[in-house]
Image (tube, rainbow, N blue to C red; front, side, top):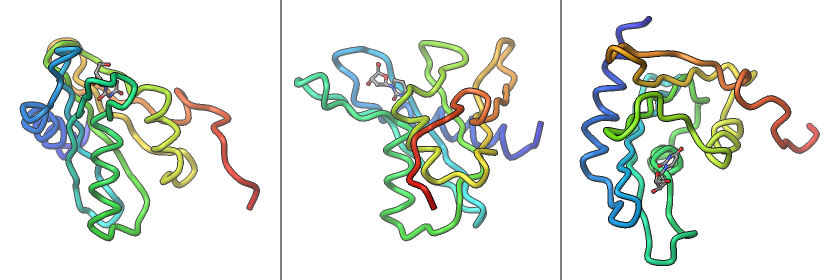
Length: 133
Ligand code: THU
């Protein structure tokens, strides 16, 4: 496990404290690492109209794009104080795939015993939608 993944999980943990999740009471934080070496953070933001809630992962990616990031995503760490191994939802997997190079993105989760656990996007999201090149 790369040292940077520990750092990313720690950052995801910190940003999860900013979560606005009064409806689910399920805070989530994400730290996305790009090939540029830059990291961007996001937390989930809920709404009284439940379906409008935004996930932490998509907020982190939106922050990267808004900041002008142009490289591909290398890895994303996801953390919730409510659940170990907080997997990205289907919508977030599709978002990650949009910015993937060969779907090789690593998903870093807090595993059992607080140790980071890494999965590949291609293993949890095969055959995502893409336009023909
Ligand atoms: N949530 C995320 O932020 N990321 C995920 O991948 C799964 C779910 C949020 C959405 C909602 O605010 C709360 O967790 C409960 O579903």
